Length: 160
Image 1: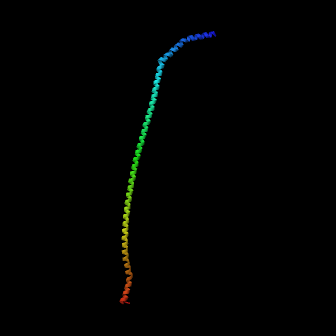
Image 2: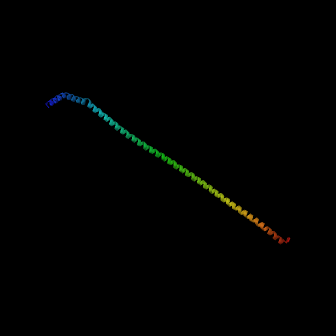
Image 3: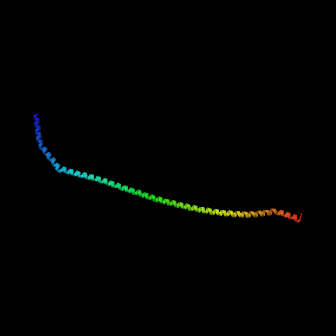
C-alpha cells in the first residue's frame, strides 16, 4: 500500500504543471475569449430581440393599415350602396310618375270615349225616334189607306 501511495504522490506531483497550465489557460480564456464572446453573444441577442420586436411592430403597423384599408373599403361599399339605392329610388319614382301619367292619359281617353259614346247613343236614339215616327206614320198610312179608300167609296156612293 505504501507503494501505491508513493505512486499516487508521484502522479500528483507530475500533474501540478498540468494543473498550473490548465489554470493559466482558463484565466487567459476568460480574459481573451470569454468576455468578448459574452459581449458578442449579448449584442447578438439584443439585435435578434430588437429584430423580433421590430418585426412585431411592423406586423402591428401592417395590421393597423389593413384595418384602416378595410374600414375605407367598407365606407366605399356603403357609399356605392347608398348611390345605388338613390338611383333605384329615382328610377322607382320616375316609373311611378310614368305609370301615373299613362294612367291619367288612359283615363282621359276613356272619358273622351265615354263622352263620344254617349253622344253617339243620344244621336242614335234621336235618329231611331225620328225613324220610328216616320215608320209608324208610313205603317199607319199603308194600313189605313185601303180602309180609307173603301170608306171614301161608301161615302161617295161609288161603284158598288
